[in-house]
Length: 428
Figure 1 (cartoon, helix red, strand yellow):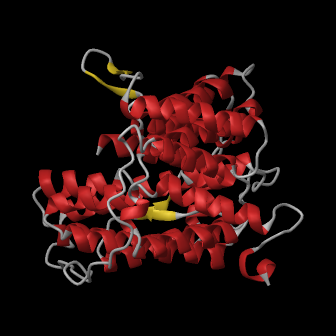
Figure 2 (tube, helix red, strand yellow; figure 1 turned 180 degrees about the vertical axis):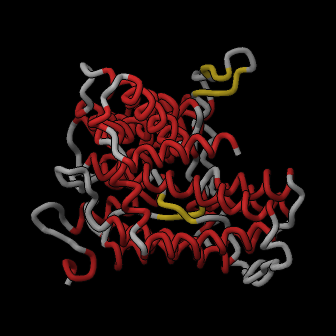
C-alpha cells in the first residue's frame, strides 16, 4: 500500500526513517508560519488569516507532492517571492495586494501550461551537467548561510556587509551549542540525529531565555478576509506583465535549483542527469501556486529545507505526507510549534548544507570551461541570496566561456536560447 501511495521502497528506507525525515523537514521550515504572515501583512492583509492560509496552502501542496509526485519534498510560500510580493509590488510600485494575488494566479496558470507542454523539463535538460552538479553545492552554502543568520551567528555589518555576531550569549551561543550537539549525534550515526538535535537545542534554550512557550493550543483564524480576492482591472497592463514575469522567473529557477540540487545528492537522478518524476513535481508546484493564490498567499514553491528531511533519510512521498500532517497539526498547536527558535533549527541547516556539498566532487575542476561556471553558480547563490541568480549567472558564463574558447561542440541551441533569455532578464 505504501509503495502504491507514496513510491515507498523498503530496500531504500523504512517507515520510521520517513516519519523522522518528515518531522525534521517540517521543523526546519516551520519558521514560514511566522515569517510569511509578518511579511505579507505589511500590505494590509489580515495577519491571522495569513497564518491559516499559509498552513493550508503548504499542507495542500505538500500532500499533492506526496500522493502525485511521490517525492520527499515539501512546499510553502517561497521566501524572496513573498518579499517581492509585499515590498516591491505593493509597497514600492504602489499596487494593492489584490493586484499582486492576481499576478500570482496568472503565474500559476502559465506554469500549469508550461508543465503540460514539458517546457519546464526541457529547460532542466538544457542545463549542462557541470551546473547540475554544482547547484547542490551552491544550495548547500546558501541554506547553511540562512541557518547562521537565523541564529544570529552571522549578522549585518555596514562596513563588510556581514560579520560574526555575539557568539558568547543569546541565540548565537545557543546555535553553536546546538551545532556541536547535532554534529556529535550525526558523527555517531544516530538515527534521527537532526530531529533530536532540534529538540535538545530547543530545550537548552529554555533556561537561556530564548525558547519561550506561551501556550500550546489555539483555534485557527478564518481566511475569509483574503480568500478569492482578485483585481482584474489591470491584467493587461505593462506592470502586470513585468510582475508576472518576475514571479515566473524566480519561482521557475528556485524550484529547478532545489529539485536538481537535492536529487543529485540522494540518487534521484539518472546517469544522464534526468530527475525521476520531475514533471509531476513541477505540476505540483504549479497547482500549489494557483490554489495558494485563491487561498490568499504568494507563490508556492518547493522548499530548499526539504534537504533536511532527505538528509535524515527521506526518499519517498511518505516523508512529504508526514510533513503535511505536521502542517495541519500546526493549525491547532501554533504556539507550541512557533516556540522553536531559529537558533534550534540553524544547526540542521548548516549540517544539511555540508551534506549537499558532496555533489561538487563530480565537477571536473581540471577543465576551466567547466569549473569556472560551476564555481560562479556555487558562489553567487549565497552571496546574491538567490538560487535562481546563481543558476542564471552560471549558465551565462558557461555559454560565453565555451563559445569564446571555441568549444562549440559542448553547446546546444537550447543553451544559447536559455543564456540569451537570462541576459534579457537583467536588461528588462
